[in-house]
Length: 303
Image (cartoon, rainbow, N blue to C red; front, side, top):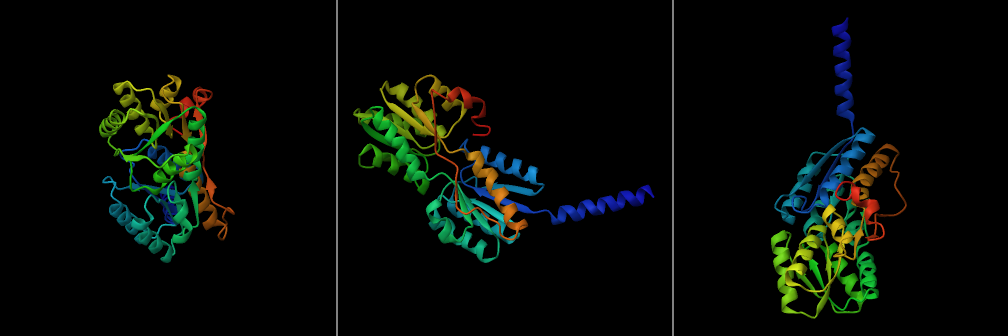
């Protein structure tokens, strides 16, 4: 009898696991940017809380063609939903449209707000990037920033370009942006070279946390006096704020970008297409000397 009950229990578990919802998240540059492990953690946390399956994938190459292939491969497995960052709508649009056409609900996160709806995604969860850039630029101008330069680690990423454009719109200058790559050694070298080539530059915007840390080292190396502001958080960025080397960073609360799409897809599949009435903005918010200590333990973990 015990063996029979055990066998029946095992069959029930197998049946339950076979019926469990399964969601796949695919993002870009996870291997080089400390931002993405927080998003991945959030997705796993949401899946655990809801009792659903969760898979996380990224293309180590960082190549958009490779990311598109991941989307196509995931679509072929018929998941209950796809969660996809959208840094390049031209490169990824076909794969996303293919997923939607095959009946897989898609939510875009992080990048691609402006293209999400046109590609058939249910909604977008992320920060309005142009507005976030403007907020950073308005504050930089108020704090005395003069000639500025934006450091972009992903020239193909429309979200990062929007940050730079918004910043320069607010400071009232023509866009001045360079590609510093995702390699921290190159970021430092290229930033230092730019500051040495044009000593009149006294304001930098770093569009990623690792860019921020490398830029701070470049400023020290050159010996320049520069207003440095950044996007996103790591323990290193928090330390730079506390040390007075970074004026502020924009917090887009990437944990929300990983957690909320799993919840939304679960509600969508469980309650006949239930959806929020609008996209979910995860930011922006400022972290500076006034509140850095309060969020320090969350940097790189949940924010």
